[in-house]
Amino acid sequence: MVDFRLDYFEGQLAQQILGDAIGVATWVDTRVFPDIAPEGTVLPYITFADITAQRAYHMTGDTGLTHNHVVQIDCWSDEPAESRQIAGKVIELLSAVQATWGTQIDVRRSHLASMAREYVPDGDGSEKGAWRTRMDWEFAYRDA
Image 1 (spheres, one colour):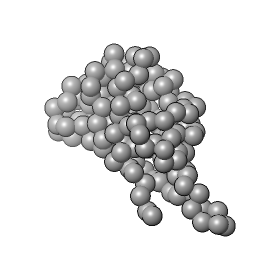
Image 2 (tube, rainbow, N blue to C red):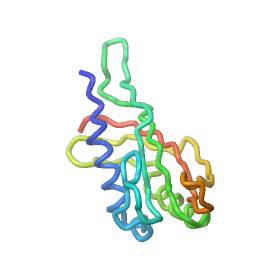
Image 3 (tube, rainbow, N blue to C red):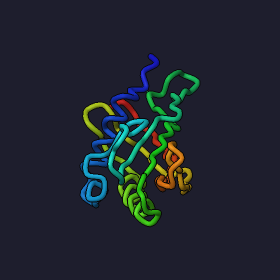
């Protein structure tokens, strides 16, 4: 069966970010979006996108473990320090997660694979843009 449950995983990831007790939502409120934020979204906010997902196989067949599920999480702000602070809270929240998300995802491992920060100019040629702290996260999980 080739079912990575990506939509379900994305939904659960968003709930984890919004429902945390350590303060990510203090900055972004409910502004956490898959892929691209809607036009006109107020800063700061978070976007995330699935990059890759692979099933783990053994000599006897499918192990049931999805590994190297890479998700890019971007923290956007008009201030570089704020973008880094939001990313720091996401790191606190997601580092070394081992938990059941919802009814279908049993997360066995998570870690931050890479992180970078950049200024992204607005597409209209104005001086206004946003700071983005980009993080690539790897998750390993089983179907719960």
